[in-house]
Image: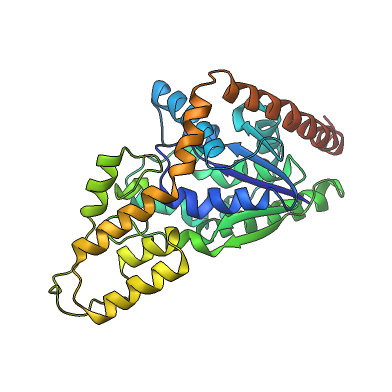
Amino acid sequence: MRILSGIQPSGTLHLGNYFGMMKPAIELQDRGEAFYFIADLHALTTVQDAGALSENIRNVAIDFLACGLDPRKACFFRQSQVPAVTELAWILSTLTPMGLLERCHSYKDKMAKGFAPSHGLFAYPVLMAADILIYDSDLVPVGKDQKQHIEVTRDLVIKFNETYGNTLKMPEPSIQESTAAVPGLDGEKMSKSYGNTVGLFEEEAALRKKIMSLKTDSTPVESPKPVENSTILGLYKLVANSADYAQMEADFRNGGCGYGDFKKRLFGAVWEYFTPMREKRKEILADPGYVEMVLSEGREKAGGVAGKVMARVRSAVGL
């Protein structure tokens, strides 16, 4: 089983990225042949500062490796370094109905957030389909907000195979329910777009300041605290063991503890959870050539698979 997933280098990675995409992907690398890519071509739709994008790409690679991606188990590479993906995207685009893209909510969401309209944003689902299909992917883990793009991919497989014969493999989605469960500093879903993120590798003082700034209500110290939709509990559940989480929830219900105390506990749990990953990150940074070696080896493997798929596609369409 070949598993495919990608992550955009559109900024500093945060807890939402880790628990929503990275942690599930790292766990899946033991269940099949994992292909994980840095979606730098997709990032061009929102990051148009060359220096920032280059730095983001490297930091995403370092962070993913520090968090447990194992290049002995997973093929890890940059999207842009396998040119076949853009060729397939163009061929798919010649079969993609405009109405199919017009129904996609991602473009409308980006417009609502103030992004400038572009062909890249509009055609994003076609490039995502190419990402999936160029590697003969079997399983694609995605959050609920990306489910529609997998449906587009499956529609394009049907259309292509009906037009040119049985050429492209039909992928299956694996919906990651956890992606919507990571609250940001303001209680909304953690997202760079909302400016409410907690970075994976914040400095200790910066992390403490962010945790202590979490938005809470005005319930007095001695009173029970509401547990429903609590940002503190939502984050604590991700990083604490079950016994510690049960104790904090009980303290919420019983009263007698203030939000400041709960935030201190949350800070300690977040700091401890990522301590081994911080150490691994230091080791990676101490070996300047390691990241490029991993990405280069990943590019060779991914390119080999993509070349075979592209040969089938070219033959099918008559190129």
